[in-house]
Image (cartoon, rainbow, N blue to C red; front, side, top):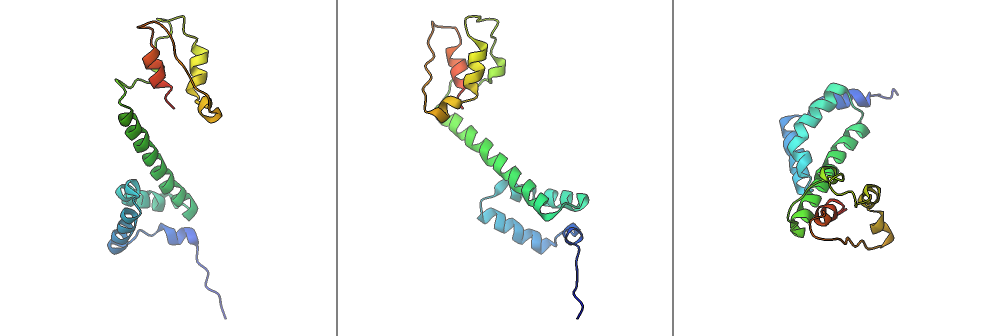
Length: 139
């Protein structure tokens, strides 16, 4: 008896049929993997062109989905917080306000205070950038 061997990477190189694409899209929608459903054909074509192993392809698909869901989550929470504006910390002019310790603010931006259960209180007179710094280090 002769065992049949197949090359997994060669088997993965074939593009799916239209019926398979439709079923895959339906599965992705049912699992609420919207980003993967949108980019499925492009991801499959790229995997076939690069002859990606199955695990690499799966890691790429799931990585994109996690990134999309994380970005959506941050956007939703930012909207729910009703910040008056959203400016990244990189836009803050530390030269304009030399009384603010840049190193301390950048340390706070790492959000380690959340892991430790600490609170942060930002004090100062009006117009020194408390709101912008607070929003920028929101975690």
